[in-house]
Image (cartoon, rainbow, N blue to C red; front, side, top):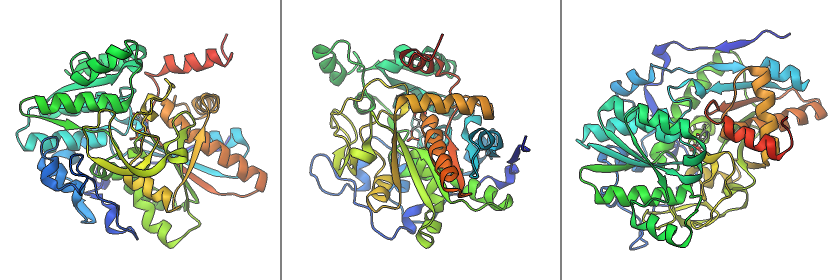
Length: 434
Ligand SMILES: Cc1ncc(COP(=O)(O)O)c(C=O)c1O
């Protein structure tokens, strides 16, 4: 049995700034468009839904954006997160590849989402906002914002995609524990939701619909702002604490990556993990970067790269992104956090420019990857993270076939302790369970 190794940094090594890749990209990103005029949105256009501090981060080109001390203090509850050498997975796969994973499942709610939730709650509180309204898919983002809102003294209202609301009661309980209100989306509480439910009373919902519900409630509420858990540049910016720590950890372990892998829903864990490596990729085209997504919702693989709305009800600004269409209703796959019709404009452009390769995966591959990882490395992965693991297993098998000892590093974006019912469901439909 190979020795298990991991690199744990000290609290002083939590990054002091978020890394803004826009300072280093060899192209200029297409601007966000105002939904009314189709002209580039100005910072003031975003004021009805976001606080100034976050709007500034959405537009800035400054390479290093300082992390306020109060946020670093909260990060210290669970950061720096470990980088683990997955020796048992390597042994199981009998591969010459070296496999490492960044373990973001150690956060208070079990995923990377807390990294931006704390930042968003802090900047809203600083500007006197009292309430945050948001959407959530599988519930990871909603619980992260509920936690962060409570920490910084804000109330939180969450619109949860109906299919997840019905199948993941423990996520609702976690949000309630942190004092948030949770409603299923499409919601009887909004004009948009009522209209959807009139034509389809059993609608499963989607992230696009839940965003419309949340934005509608925000603009009709007093002293409230909307909070988004992925997609936008400022959200990816906050997540870059992940990749910055990984770079430090790989250096300490004397490891140079050949392949980086993370899953993509809206693109925030992927962006947070890989964007700090983009300057390396620009110098070295051999560094392969792979984005894993479900074949049932393949926005990077099969979507068009064009302007589209971030939500189904067309209340949000237009983003240039890989999209399956804002009216695309994905099937109720178990990875609720990957059921989004689009993907972050930064990640989409990196795919369009061929710096990133998408990989789409079937549900049975995901279940198998989750089982293997749980039994080798001892962590039940979130269904979303299991997509990354499935890509890693594919790449490790290629290394075996080609006798190539490549180094693969991936982001374990979260654990699946509250997603067991979904795993059981796929196991049953695959006839894989007794
Ligand atoms: C554990 C986990 N990983 C990944 C994702 C996908 O989101 P993103 O692409 O923003 O990281 C989610 C979304 O809910 C999630 O809960």
